[in-house]
Image 1 (cartoon, rainbow, N blue to C red):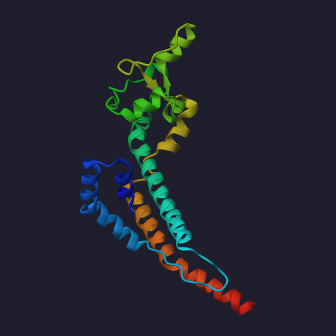
Image 2: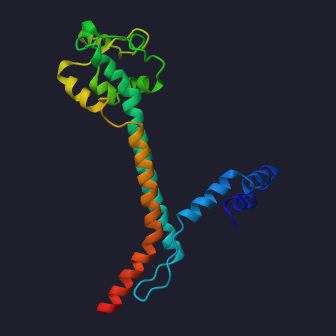
Image 3: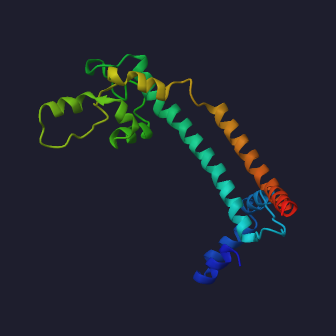
Length: 213
């Protein structure tokens, strides 16, 4: 019984039946079946090992999971450097190293970036490298109420002591699209080779143990 058939058995109803019919004839099912064939892993019987089909599926899923994790982490690094890094690089380029030279998000062309605003408001990585001039002035006045960050008027700058760290972390010489494509290609190829030849390597280890015992 497939996952969708199990859902239908539990919930019933025409909606789930239509969903199953759609899935059976969809490109998603064809893609899953293709991936299952490409990354298929079949362990045979060994003299010194017992590898069940369930264990083989678990090993395959771990390999694919590591590959996807590597690709996702690389994509996130690229996104951080290209989107959030643009904000930092613009402050560096325009030498915004003091409150007097601080700029707003509008002035650096990043007001529409939800990622940058989220990082700054949630005390993320960007807020650890940049400072808000209004917030520092507010703290200096011993305001009793918490400071509320207003992105329409807030000015940001990078302190001199953090300039080098910001440049190293968000430099344009870092991770780019060609590297991400290379990571995807290498990751998929490595996962394929592991799924394809791991059973043979286990068989070789089984033969060596038998030959040496």
